[in-house]
Image (tube, rainbow, N blue to C red; front, side):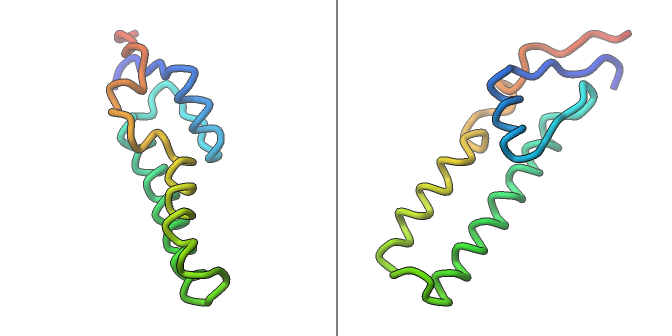
Amino acid sequence: MPGGYIYTTEVLEELARHGLAPRADTPPQQLRNAVRDLYKHEIKRLKARLLAREFPKGEYAGRVVALRRRYPLLSIPMELWIERQRSGV
């Protein structure tokens, strides 16, 4: 795509927490997919830890909620991730 995306500071900070640093030509959908995949990986690990009895079953729901809070971008519509789209160069 000509031009690119200008991501909000808040979105860039959240992405950086997950080790992601988009370029101006990185589409929001690609980033959302990456964040979603990271979340899915962590939730599977959490489930495996539960099944391995590393913590009591009663703690599982709270741990899922805590994990979900580490991924707020999944709750924000992608159109709010960018300030504006750069025009063609």
